[in-house]
Each structure stands twice: as structure tokens, then as C-alpha cells.
Length: 121
Image 1 (tube, rainbow, N blue to C red):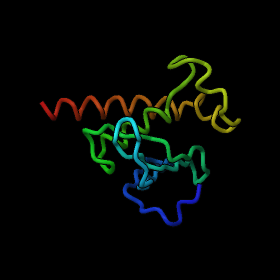
Image 2 (tube, rainbow, N blue to C red):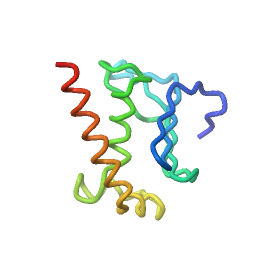
Image 3 (tube, helix red, strand yellow):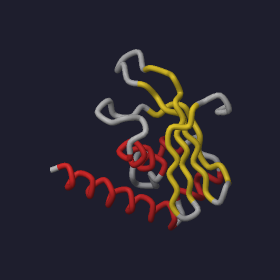
Image 4 (cartoon, rainbow, N blue to C red):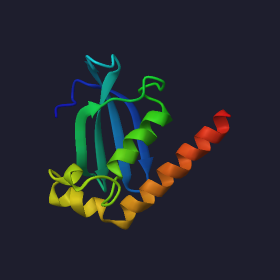
């Protein structure tokens, strides 16, 4: 994916993890909301990239809600969804989903989403 001409709209970092979100300028023909492109790295090594994530139409593309929503997909592990979801994962991606770091990220994201929900009440 060539992101050199895409606008960076959000960068999230935690420890050795980095998620960069780009404006993909692409609309879903059915839902009408826009997609974002992303790159997710650990220790500088690219684990995931795509331009196929559609944030909730209730959240801004550069919001923390969008960051946490995307991270929750990137932190899915065995048992969280059907095995077919991981059918096209690379060896590095499979190693990631089976790592303690991925599990810790999943817990962190859940905690932050709950915290944001409480603060909105």
C-alpha cells in the first residue's frame, strides 16, 4: 500500500507499538462513511496494513474511539472469532496474535473503551 500521498490523520504509540492512520479518501457505497488506511508496527516492523477499515459514522476518523476500534481488530486472537478470520495471516501476524503483547493490547483497549464510555455518561 502506497501511503506516501495520503494524509496522516492520527498516530498512536504505546511502548514498542505504533499505529498510523491515514485518510484513504474512499467511501463505502452502502453505508456512506469513509474508510481509513492504516499501518500497525511493532518494534518498527510492519505487522498489518490496509485501507479497508470503516470507522463508526458516530466517530471522527482521527478520534480515539476510531483508534481503539481499529486496535481491537488488530488484537483479535484465537478464540475471539472464527478460525477462518486468520486464514490469510502471515507467520509474523500469527506469532503476533499468539503473543502476550497482543493479549495485553486487547486488555488495554477494552479498559480504555470502558473508561471512555463511563466518561460520556
